[in-house]
Image (cartoon, rainbow, N blue to C red; front, side):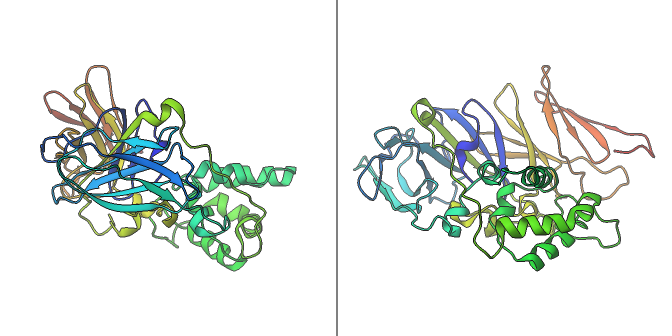
Length: 374
C-alpha cells in the first residue's frame, strides 16, 4: 500500500488484514505508554547520491506489544524525521515507485546517528518489481484511448472490473487469451468480494455479454506479448505534503474461516503487488467521532463483533456484537457506517440499521419488515 494515497487532512483506509491508516500532521501514537524521547531521523538518496523528496519511510517497533506502524516522508533535501519515539529496536523501510525498497533494523538507546537510505532504481520498467508498485489510477491513465474502440473498452473495463477490487489487482497480472477467459468465467459467477463462485446462480450479465471483447482487450493490454501500456507513476509528495505523518493501526483479525488473514496482505514491499479483494474482507468503512475514537464496520462474520471502536491513543479495540434476528449465534455483519452531528453512529446490520451513541455506548437496532429487501 502506498500510504500517501490517504488525504493529508483526514481520511481512513482499511487494508487487507484489518488495518486502519490515519493521516495527521505532526502526530503519532505511542506503543504501550512508553516515554517518547528518541529522535529517529535520516536522509534518503538515490544510488548516485541525489536527494530524493517524497519517499515514504516507515518504522515499526519490534517489541511484542507494538500495534502501530508510522510513516513519514522525506523533504526536498532528502531528510526525514519521525515524531519522538521510545527507546528500543525498530524495523525500518523506505519506498518510492520505480525503486527497490530499502530496509534496515536500528536500535535507539539515548540518541544516536542518523539512519540513511540509498535507493536503487529498478532498471526494467516492464518487470513485476516495478509494475506491481503502481496504483489503480496510474494503471487507468496508462490504458490506451487513442481510438473510439479503445475508449469504449477502457470505459467498459472501468465500469465492470473495479467494483470489488482495485484496478491494480487486475493489471499487475499477465495472461494469454485462455487465462483471461478462465478468469472472466470465474468472476461472472462470483458474489461481490466473496471469492467463491456459485455456478447455480445466473452469470453477471455485463461480464457474460462482453466476455469476448474483454478477453481480446485484456490479452492485448496485459497478455504474454509486448504490452502497449507505458504506465508512469504519479508525482511523489513535495513541499508541505511531505510533512504528513501516517499512523497504521493493527486490528484484531477476523476469527472465522471466511475471514482469511494471510501474509499476502501484510507485505511491506509495494513490489509484492495488491492483495485480492477476498483477503481485504473484514474491516470495511470507518468514521471518527468527536472524541477521536475510530468506529469501524466489520464486513465478515466474526463471533466477537459487528462493529469495533479503536482508541488511537492506546491502540485498544472494543467490540460490539449485534445478535441476528433469527437467533443464529454468529453476530450480524456491517458494511457502511457514518456518525451524525449528534454523535450517533449509524451502521448497516445485516438486514437492519444499527445506532450506537458514541458517548454512552447505548446500542439500538431497527430491523426492516419481513419480506422487505435489505
